[in-house]
Image: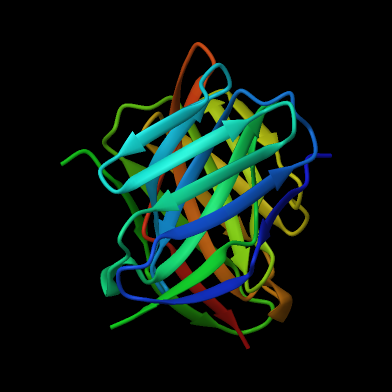
Length: 110
Length: 114
């Protein structure tokens, strides 16, 4: 069974600092990994998808890396802003489904 | 805009009642999913459907049933609701292209069972 872990569970940083969010998974036979953002009580917004053959993906201030052999992914958010405050979820796709981590809740202090 | 919609957005019900949550999508995706989210546990898969005639149980299907009425519609039913089914429920869709499976989520339904 795929287990996905996100550490830390919560993170608070001052505005402007770079954010580093970690995700680890136990079964490296994945097809892709997806990072989501969730605002309180809201749905999930897809941020980045990295296919298993890729090492990283970038979108604006966001960069996600994937090391499939070690079962790790990292989401970097450059120059954080208060609007980046949210919960970030990592999910890996193998077999027929996504397996989710519990998320990292980020607070960016103005 | 192509989208995933869920109705109702909030529902409070009593133990023993039958509840249906509905999901519609305009993305034209074949695959649809139902998840529940509980605090600190992440999202867990309840049921998934690869097309209208292909419906499968996920990891926590007990107490739930589904119906895929059309490619665009996927409903989740709680036949006899119980308090530990209080959660945030999400519908999602995806289209698979090779090994790429990107999922898109609806806004969620907050269900409270008293």
